[in-house]
Image (cartoon, rainbow, N blue to C red; front, side, top):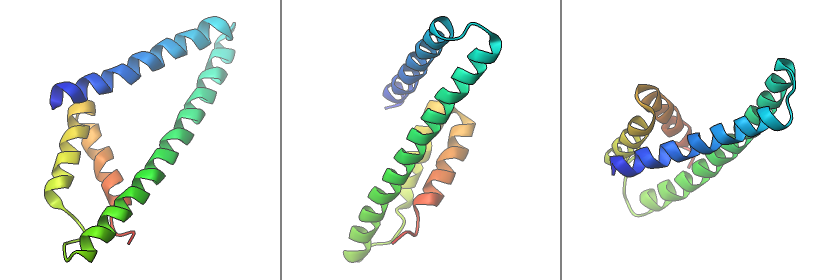
Length: 110
């Protein structure tokens, strides 16, 4: 599983780097224009990330409702450890911190 996680993590970075280079070569003629174009791209990416987090929160709520409805616990600790491992494998120690925040956002919304 770690090899797949690493490959998945590398692919978007490569695509993003290529896209950023295209922005620099095609539209930015000055450092200020490059910075402005890159900040616009970051804002777009942030909006997509926020949307994906909100979608993840909704899916997590469905899982929690089903688990609680069948007599289980709201939080499944072994699953959370899998999530933490996945993020850590892909992004290192900061990935673990990010995953903890993500898990916190997705808990207790039921």
